[in-house]
Image (tube, rainbow, N blue to C red; front, side, top):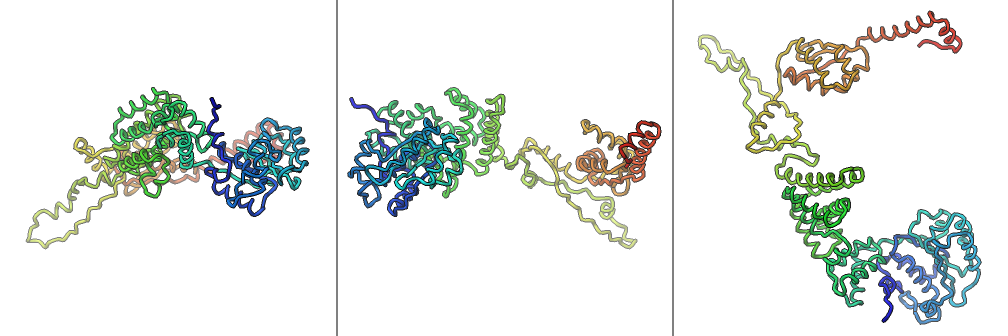
Length: 570
C-alpha cells in the first residue's frame, strides 16, 4: 500500500507555467532570468498558501539550470536540475526564521554565504517567515544583505511585510503576491479532480474555493478532506454538510419572505438556521453578502463580480429581477447596521430578529409608496390625490354675491385670490386606504394656515405654559417664567431679555416655541422679536463690581491680599 501524499504537496507547481493565479509576477521573474537582470535580494510577501515559497524554489532552480528551455523554464535534465529534483542540491538552502530567529543562526548563515557553489552559478538562500527574526538578528543581517558575495542570492518570504524593518525592505526587490481568485482556484481543483478520477459538481468546487479565502494550499487541503468524506463523487450537499457551510437556499427563501412581508416565515427560517448550529453573527454576515450578490446581478456590467457556479448564478439573476434596487440598498444598510451592533448587544437573537422584521417592512413601504429610504413620509405622494376643501367666501365676497339694488350705482369690488399656503407637515407614518381617509382629511385641514385673533393675556398664558415642554432645562424655564411677551401688530410679539445669553437660549428653541404657541393660539403667523434691556445688563455688571469693592473695604485682610498681589477689579 503506497503512502498517501496530500494534494498540496503532490500537485505543488514545479515550473513557472504551473503556478496558479500569479501570472504577472511570474512573467516578471522569467524576464529577469532571460535578460540576466537578477537582483541579489528579493522579498516575496502575501497571504498564506498563494505560492511564495513555491516561486522561490522554482526561481532558485531555474537560475542554476545549465540548459534553459525557450519558455524560460528549467530543463530538468542537467546536473543541477537533477540534484534539485532528488533533494540533494547544495546550491539551495532554506531557513525557517520562525524557529531560527536569533543572532547566532544569522551569524552561521553569514559564514555559510562565503562558500561558493560546487555546481551551478548561484547559492540561493530562502528564508521563510522572515518577519519572525528578532531585531538583533535583522541588524546582524543588514550588511550581508546589502553587499553579499556575487554568487549569493537571498529570497525572503513573509506573510506580514509590515513587521519587517525599513532597512531590510530598502535592500530588497519586493514582490506582492495576490490572493488567488475563485475562478483560478476552481480551475485548478478541476484539474486535480480529473487527475484523481473524482467526479465533482461545479457548485461544490465554488464552495471549497470560497472557504479557502484565496489560498490554494487551503483549497487543496479542504478538497482532500471532502474526498475522504464523500469518496470519488463530490456533491454540493455533501460539501456544505461536511464543511458546515450555510446553504444558499436559506438566503433565497429569506429574501422571498422579505418581498412578501412574511415576518413569521423569516423568523422560522432563522430559527432553523440556529438549530443547525450556525452562529447568528455568521448568518448576518452571510445575509449581507447574499444581498450584495443579488445587487450586482441587477446590472449586466457587474454580473462578473458574482463568484458562484452557473446554477446558483441563475438563481441570483432570477431573484434580482424580483427585487427593486432601492429595496436592496435599504436591506444592505439594515443588515450592515445589525452586523456593527452585534458585538455590543446583550440580547443578540432579538437584535437579529428585529433586523428581519425591518427587512420585511421594506416591502410594505414599497407597496404603499409612502416612505422613502430614510423612513420619512413623502408628502407629495400622500396629498397628490387629496381634494382640498373649497375656501369659504369672506364677508366682502358675500356682499358681492348678494343681489344689488339697481337704483344705486354699482360698486365693483375686486375679489382677492385665495392663497394656498405650502404644506409643512412632519408625519411619522400614514397609509392611504379607505379605512383612514378621514385621518388624511383631518391632516389636510390642519395643514391650512390658521389666523385666529388672540389677546395679549392669552399670549402670555400660552408663553408661561411652554415651560411644561422643557422641564429638564432649568435655566431656560427660569428665563421663560421671568419674562412676559408684549403683543405688537400682525401677530408679532416682543420679548424683553436681560442679556445676550438669554437671547441665545431663546434663539435655540425658537422653532419649537413658535410651533407650541401656534397650536395654543391657533395662529400660524406668529413672529417673535427679542430685545435686550441694556440698563439691566449694565446694572448687573456694576452691582457685581460694587459688591467686590465693598467687601475689600470692609475686610482688611482681603484688602491686604489684593494690594499685595497687585489685583485690580475689572
